[in-house]
Amino acid sequence: MADAVQDLTVDEEVLDGYEGAIPRHVAVIMDGNGRWAKQRGKNRIRGHQAGADAVRCTVESCRYLEVEVLTLYAFSAQNWGRPRREVSGLMTLFNRYIKKERERLLRNGIRLQVIGDRSRLSKKLQKAIANLESASADNDGMTLQVAVSYGGRDEILRACRRLAGLAKRGDIPIEEFDEELFSSQLYTADCIDPELVIRTSGEQRISNFLLWQVAYSELYFTKTLWPDFDESQLLAAFEDYGKRQRRFGKTGEQVAE
Ligand code: IPE
Ligand code: IPE
Ligand code: MG
Image 1 (cartoon, helix red, strand yellow):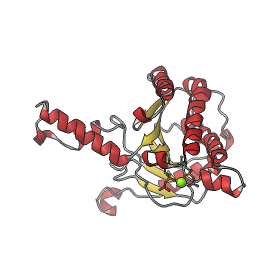
Image 2: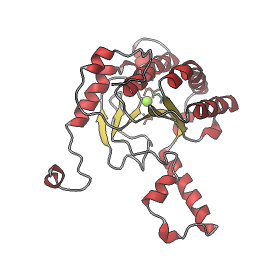
Image 3: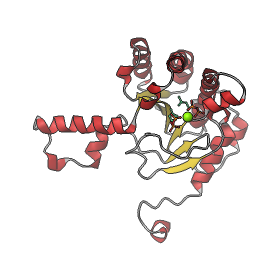
Image 4: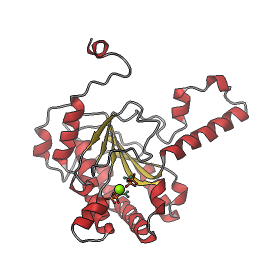
């Protein structure tokens, strides 16, 4: 397992002992950094810093377990409405993450892709993202999709605008609009839908994440706050996922056949 992975910081012994199901696409709503900090009498930014360490752990664990796509919800379109200091602290962390993890991501064959409205990010961050995206474009170990300045409704509207443009120009007749064509206009074009969505911190909602793509995803909620989410928590989520029967509208008997 994991022949091309190098110098990972994850607990390989914990991961090697796992024999259950592994979803192909895992998406995570990384929630609870603020509460984690509050519990320790620290400011929220300290919680986000601790959250960044948990990101590395989950990225490396998924890579090690040969997950194909990992999507992380890092900053929503609505998170722009947070206090200015918190927003700029988060932006600093994204910049730092790209710089610090660059070599490690490339060494481990991980392809980075950022989804969301990147025009709202600073020019410097946009450049750093574009740079790492192109440097990692040919990697096939795992795709890491990071949702930044991302909103699901936003993404759907954007796709509608693009389709309307195609129709208006006469490029595609409206009768040919179908789910496949619609999907191809989303940020996640070419990507399989998430099989498992994990949300930390006890909240049980989607918060505008991948609205179109989660139509049939299995949802897993844990009370663990994101900075405390580690290898064994990830495996617990996978294990739970493995017990589900995914029916896609059919009967249990049909699926069991
Ligand atoms: C998730 O943690 C990170 C972001 C939304 C950027 P929160 O910052 O939402 O943490 P809580 O929900 O306040 O605990
Ligand atoms: C969702 O968390 C967004 C991210 C994890 C980036 P929020 O903390 O912003 O979600 P709500 O506001 O509690 O729904
Ligand atoms: Mg939150």
